[in-house]
Image (cartoon, rainbow, N blue to C red; front, top):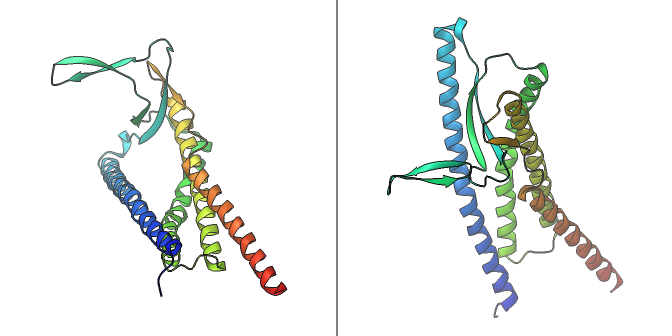
Length: 229
């Protein structure tokens, strides 16, 4: 018995989706690992500095911030050296990592905000592990041509909900960095800009929930038709 062309197409698309998702996932894992290692090194260095000289301890934190120009008429407010020609070329920074040394104690609100984020990091990390697990379960099901069933609907719903939760945590984290950095840092040529309130995580989550709702409705119609027959 020959396989239907639509089945072949679905299998091929499922495989391609799995490969593409893996190509997106691997750089994110590498980047997260590097950031985690760097954070662990920084924390270890800070703890040693505190042990050696607790009376002269200065809290340090790295901020990742978005920037906007103070002078709207100056499109390239900075310059960098081109080592090939030994000339400086104009540049503009839209994002920046800042390593700041706090001189004064932070407000109680910011301390509580950061503590809340620290407690939320582990559950969010768990969701980031569950998302690819649910995704590849869905891909394998589609590859086997098991499309319209309640299990796939649940998987898509979970993916959508997980993405929206991760988006919410990311937004809170960026809001913390924005408030904390803006309260102590004033750059010469740039303003610290608000975080992006809408991004691809939210869109993916909403699209997944829409697809799940459509599939749920299609299953309901199919069941009604089978009962009618």
